[in-house]
Image (cartoon, rainbow over all chains, first blue to last red; front, side, top):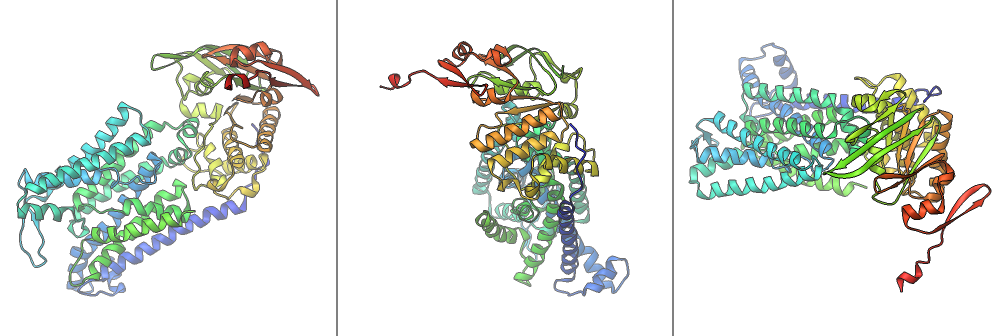
Length: 354
Length: 258
């Protein structure tokens, strides 16, 4: 083949620049939301004070305490967890070539909830302690987290195992995930039926995804898995684009479709499992956020992956700030708000589709 | 010799789909693989670029043994246009750019963009270049798919029924485009086809597949009423119009319907 009359078309360069501009703009919006979120609460802190404190200057001892110990970990958790859930949703949609791909629709979150319930009930790790917000404490939260994580990985391996046994087609993976979701829901309901009041409260409390739960150590764990997975996903962005055009096209381009599908599922499930087991179930970010970004900049994974990450972080930190303000002084877990907003947004996206 | 296929056997679930397939195609030649549904046409096409790994046999392109290469190297030798392409919200330009994937290490280079722009010109797609492919007609999407295969800079182009879902004008347009590329760039094209008359008009060589084996192979002389009857179980006559052979079925189907 010989191609020698090609010139770089100006309009294509513009088209790429527009997408880069969208990414930069959403990054800026995320930063503003982050600062706003840190400044908002029972004690209001101005944006300049927030920024000075973050840069290590002490505006006041009280601000230092509030920002570094309470608000910053919560806001950073929201950004990182939102980014992680959104990128995993985008990748699941890519490898499954199915718009419904998300940690929720594939039973991974349900498996984590079952694991937490199992830990509370059978291993007797949950009790209720009264505090001023009427919250529940778990006797050993890390064991509950570990067991929730283990069960979501069980769900993942069953999905991958079944698809290896048959063929690694999207249909088989999605159907297996849906079946597992209802199986684990049934299991959780069974445990809840036999639980006493305190255990039941602990189980239900655990499923309310809440970014306020995270310590700096949790933030670190979530950040590491999110960043590492982001790198692997980014390396494979052209593979995802090719799979989007169909398995046949992708194979003709030298993409090892089955392998990308299985490894992609494994990594995105792992990240989801880490986030869900540390924070509880936060629905809809993984499903809705990639779709919002797709509508704005299209299905090109070179831009969709970073876009989902940034918008996911922005959405979750915004939702968390709203959840803290809406019924102030009562604080809602963010998962209730994301589910409330997510469903109507999703339906709106479906209706607006050509 | 550009493409040399030696003794390909392919089994699926222990059942022989292809047996002892041997053929050669020169540069600048268009080979049509013909045969009834289920004869193994598409399977044969997918064996050539190792999407299916044959049980035995080899495919040699420019003295390179395809089955010994890695997947990127195979994609640089063979461009594959499947029958079905999923339409995503991806622009025509970016879709064609995907064909550079075997060459792209990390960043898309200026050279890649130039090659894509040139392929877009070759298939007269300039006016659509920033349109998303989910808004294209069947004929336009097929051209995009061909352009995507071309920027792989392949030595052999594999096309799976490139005109099966197109109207008459688009069929002719696509096949003319393929023919011009094959002649102008001396690549080899192998395509599966259903319509014998279109095949006769555009292809240089023919292979008739029957039950996974080559029944007849050669130039226009091998397309005879006897061969067609043996392969398709239909009686036909061949007439010539301005030097082009045209096939007419002469079977009287009306009797069997009463």
